[in-house]
Length: 106
Image (cartoon, rainbow, N blue to C red; front, side, top):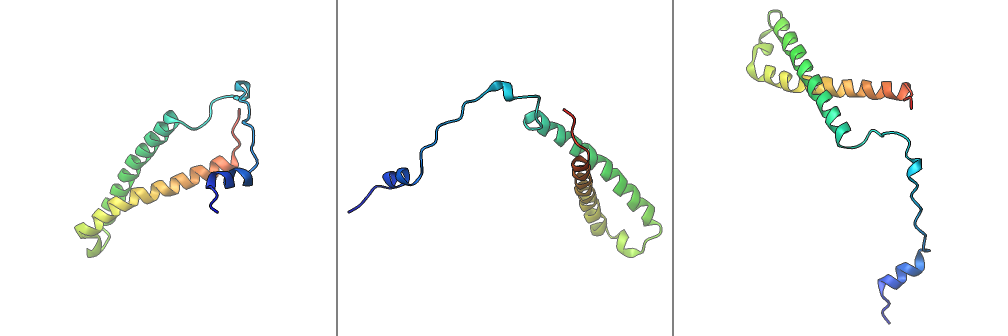
C-alpha cells in the first residue's frame, strides 16, 4: 500500500490562512534595497581609497628605517594589498559597534 507524499504532508501540517497586508503599517524607508547597497559600496570604495593612501604613506615612511625585508617587492605588494582591506574590516566593525550604541531616530 503506497500513499502519496502530498496527502501525508497535508495531513501532518495544519492549514494556515494568509495574513492580510496593510499598507498603513509601512512607516518610513528601510535600509534595504538597491540604493542602500550602492551607498554602502561607494562608502567602502572611498574608505579603500583612503586606506590605500595611508598604507602607501606608512610604507614610504618606514622604508628609510626598515631593514631589507621591507624593501622586498613581494612584501610591499602583500602589505599594499592586505593593509587597506584589513583596515576596511576594522572600520566596518567600528561602524557596526557605533550603530549598535547609538539608536536610530525615526
